[in-house]
Image (tube, rainbow, N blue to C red; front, top):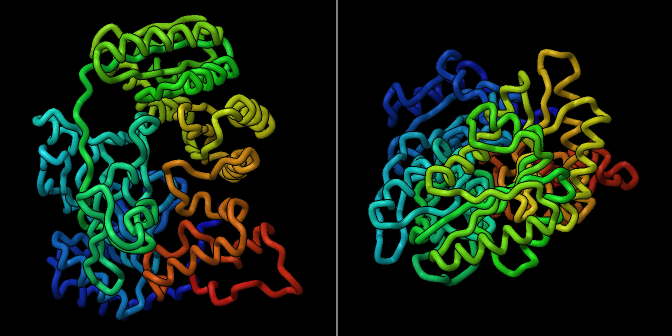
Length: 497
């Protein structure tokens, strides 16, 4: 996958020195990084296969400073990439060699917790898990829990519309955010959403959530808090085949109740996680399901009994239930550590993210297995089975010539399989630079035209995170995904993005 080119010319050394001086006029000297050794830690996000040094990194600590950075960059027509904790897996925070990387790492304050109305106001650099830790004193927590929740920031969660193992019942980030404050490229502060159930006007809150930093820079988030359930228990089912586990997923959902979480891991992922964390997984299983039930003690007891029965009817070779909170957390710890655990099996791995209708789960997993054999690259599958969000992990060695390219091609084929069964190319990781080519297959030229129109309404110069998420029609034509009529591309005015 070639890193998208924004079409902007490189900045001259004199122009860079001038921009550094302008930034240092209102930021401390140690908050404006411009030497190569200082820029190196920011050269990539969690998609480490692609790296690029930014022109300058700024680390403001106030909203006014962020506004002044944006205003200055707009005046000088300098692109800006906002960055949170850098844990994203799609290259959404990949910097630009001719642009400013705007880090929100210093925005780490929890501004208010309102236990009566069950909400919290936080700055974008607050870690996901820190919200639940702060709300725990009131018996509350923040539901979306990405596997990286110990490190990922809430601003990045909003930008990518992150999910987590409990998103089946409690929703993605978009379902748990009440209001946002963001700065436009002009430095204007805008508030969207409200503390009520609904607000007037267009639903810009939903539009900003998942916009990947292309429309504005988030500086404050108001999130919904939920009461801790009285009881939670996990049922672990082991299966002799992925197909049997897939049937169990469909049967659990069809039974009419919604688990707190419903996750699947295949044999390769099971063994990696068990070797890494010793969570108590059955290493001889072809697949396991982790199904969590939460609520009152009576609800959980009834749910666990029903899930056990469903799994046994689906030919589970073993069904266990967590006997205490320590064991429940151990079951989830193995799942959440699956990505680093798989990383111990190979020098490198590539984490994909696609979503499919649950009824096609077995079909797509079978197809992934066939593609793995075709390309000669092992694939470990770890995913949110309840909502069909797949995370195939392709194992490769970047030191071997051609391995990364074959991995990219295999990943693209997997995403195409998702589209073919009526799914999407992402569920929670975003598009970034990783999936921008597959956007050409997912959407028509008319639909991409509308996306660009929305972008232009917020950012007419195309300075916020250019080259990410939404491909140009030129790019799609180059990929052969669109038909070029008589040598002319439709919507040529969009090429500037």
